Image 1 (cartoon, helix red, strand yellow):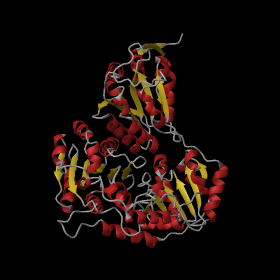
Image 2 (image 1 turned 180 degrees about the vertical axis):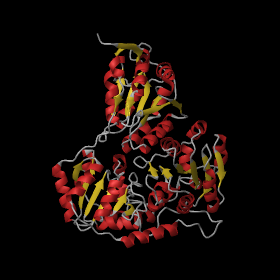
Image 3 (image 1 turned 90 degrees about the horizontal axis):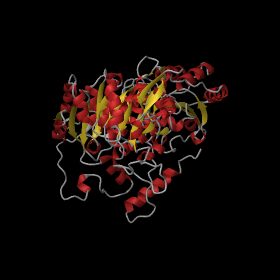
Image 4 (image 1 turned 90 degrees about the vertical axis):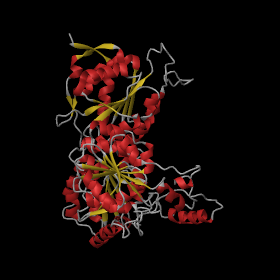
Length: 610
């Protein structure tokens, strides 16, 4: 007779999750972020409390932002570990949909367990239930369907026997990796079932390394050997594969310059002689010159997002061929690329074996000139009483931190500025730019620090993003998770204000001074952060910012440093950045818009359809 264990469905889920292991002998699901309500407190809440530290539970302040912390954790752990997030039904669940989309776009694993309506439908409609007049199976949790890799609704206790292994299979598969939603009906959470004892045998989940098709290796190797000026575009897949050293050695041996995407930045440290910096809209002069003239562009672990490709107007050598190495065929076959479906590390190793002593061409002087220009651009302002630019703020933080620092951000001006100017050490960069979600920063910094407690974490956030979501600062204080927040106050949405003007528009509804308000808000960010328990100060100038960064080390709580910046200054200089396709109106009474449209039409002619 099969041995069984009688448990509620919630108890069975929690126990099973606590027994899913990595090859390193750690739990794959490190713990559960939870805000309890009537849809999960009695069932899953009781089960998690009983497990204690076998599957820790952490309380957040907002369902979206605690999910952001979980996502940042998984990204920092290179997708080798993840966390779960649970909420009640209704608004608690739909609050997490934005975070699910963020994880989906960035290919990051997180397990969402929202409570759901009663499977037996006896008390319908229950508090917070969303009803579809034409479909009785719909609930608010159906909002997750387009933004997760796997969705299931648990309407019977025995559904766990199939849905839980499916969920972990998706989260640990490098090609399908992403968020999972298991909508858990609240009555089913409390129902008991005799589960097979074998279901709770600990399982080790291995991250596969898919091997490439030998024919694809032959084709790509031949293209490299025939190229005069190849360039490598390093994406996040390099980091998730653990291929950082392999790529650095390959680029050095074969003299091929490497340019970075937001997700791939810090795969190779900026100090490496083959690292030509960021590519694309927010790219370096050296990187964009190399990619514009390249006759072979080799993408490794990248989706070729529009910021990387200059909206597909950057790779404009008429002889250019495009190679895309990716574990996901959907990404490998973009834009007519010659696809090579493979783990990044395996692919680089096999190509290295096939191309022998091949060497490309590198313009080392262009790289040196660019780095010299960065140093000048990020230097402290000559006048200490002038409002600093974002570049000068970045320079100050760079000078005040060491090799162990991780710079992180998500939205606004700073992502472009950091990609362009931050000189990252290995693993010293964390950017959420697939979804570029305002409000990710504070919670994300906490997740990064939880995943890498040995490193100094610097969170760059603008006043706009800070106002959208800052409450997990209180969580970090409660949990004693130290990181440093550099809050740049430009009194509004400075990044979009500049984009608005760049498209010929009049300043409108972005900076507070241009909004339909009776009075501009005078927000005391220092007082606000201090009220949540953080150590908060206002830096008087760049020199003071450097001193405050140094003083933050050693604290066991977050430090928030506020500094006012000039909203008129963007992150770049000269002709470094590439064009970005932001549609400009064809018809307008404003001459500035008509001029911008003419420039837009001229730039569109550089776009390539292939």
